[in-house]
Image 1 (tube, rainbow, N blue to C red):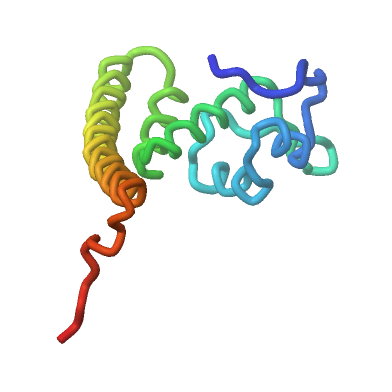
Image 2: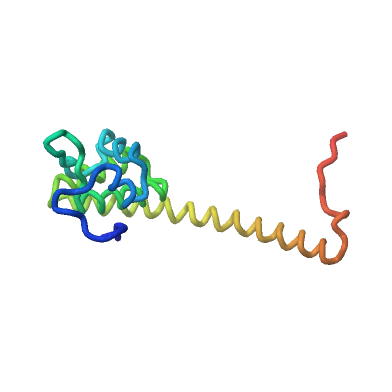
Amino acid sequence: MLEVNAGPVPRTGLTIADAARRTGVSVHTLRYYERAGLVVTPIDRNAAGRRRYHRLDLEWIAVCTRLRATGMPIATVRRYAELVAAGHGNEAERLALMEAHRAAVTARIAELAENLRLIDHKIGVYRGRLEAGEADGLWAPVRP
């Protein structure tokens, strides 16, 4: 499982502010994840009705955050959360979901690598021309 910052979680859980600090996401994002159905277990509440986050909650939020950072749509994260929450018996569907997302991430990485090659080429051209004192010969659009 992914590491969550700053040591053990008290038996009574953490406040939403403390959970936000530990996970690196905002309080607003934590509330949104809950409303959007992205959590795998209901968030515990104290006697006053305030949210209390436990280690499992923090670890799951870290998973959601990573999946979102890789471009997984909210609807897909929600489906994944539903499958995880349902427990055993749907592992093949979870695997298919992750494999499809991996393929999308791999394609995006390839696209970014191609774009990076263009950027590196342009950097090389500019460096070479500047070092040769020929920057005036660089292409610049001229409007008629």
